[in-house]
Length: 464
Image 1 (cartoon, one colour):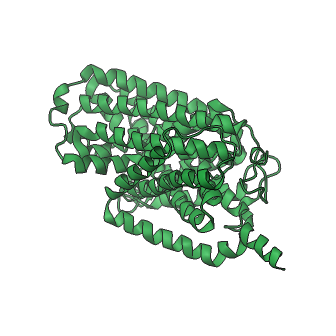
Image 2 (cartoon, one colour):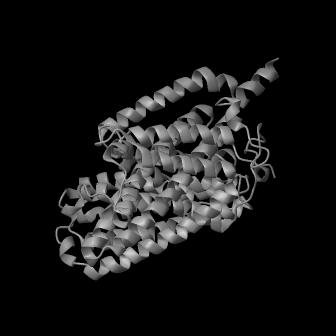
Image 3 (cartoon, helix red, strand yellow):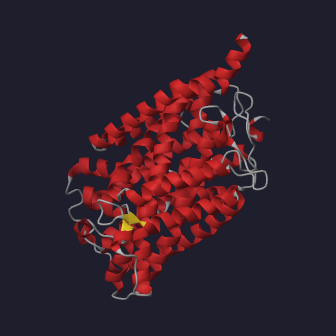
């Protein structure tokens, strides 16, 4: 089948092919690795002051939205199992202009989220170094301008390490990520076990101090940590038996991530009053120190966060490079970005470009500026996937599907509605920046992509 060899639903592609080297376990680990870490290790400190103890409900809302979308992803991933995620799905179902708009969402989503988690990694690395050897990076080299520093050197170091690993090869990267996932789950379960020893139901007495608008705002803030579902689908061209493995990996990742998020959120709020979360750096490590009165649990959590966030950055940068690779192969970006190294079978030019862009953002932009920009791109891309399911059901009803969305068409409609609800809770400045970014991307498509795409090229050839 064309889809099994890396071609798209329309019948083929130009450019390099990627090696199918990943199994179900590695693929599910990609989803878990890119989600568990961001929303728990540092975004919890951002979201809890917005919702109070009801931040737990915010995670539930975000998980339900992600779950509805995951079902839609699973159907499209089984029908169009290629690299490129929701960009490829939009290209196959809605056309070039819609695909470019989705690509703009994904580029914003992955570049900014990679930078955001790298900045969070810098906080935990300093906490770990200070607790173990009594040293830390100077403040001037630990934060961006506007965040008390001049340049975030630890964040840039992390990005460079991830870039080098991704250049080496996807199989090696997936294996390293799988090991990191096991470590991070172990550390988070240790946190849950210890935090529950200090659990106080009184911390939940005033459950919604900021109202349900705060719950919605916090749900939007934490939602970007669910981008691991999208990252799973970016690997469609590098997994064995994608029609079966992609849907299973999506469901496995979602269930695991949701369970971990809820356990950690409930135990953390139960162990520490919600008013103490605001401005708390390396939050879970700090809670462990307060609960036990000892340094070692905080050190373990900080070390786990360093490992965990490394894997998150690795996966989000991997996903970004594969999306740009797919766009280049479709002619929407310059052909250099779909060039594959003949030895490692990885898109080296694309990986290097992503590494440079993420390093610049991580080194120079504060975390609070980066965080909310991720959610809007993720939610819009997720909504388009749900639309794509309905479109493909009408335009290609006989296309082989390894998975079908249950409750169709209610499920994709609910997914779209949930995404719109979470977008409505984001700040207006975030939405304005997103609209401007989307406009720039569509202008680029009009003057480059629309003229150089495979569709435009084939039309010109037929006309001649």
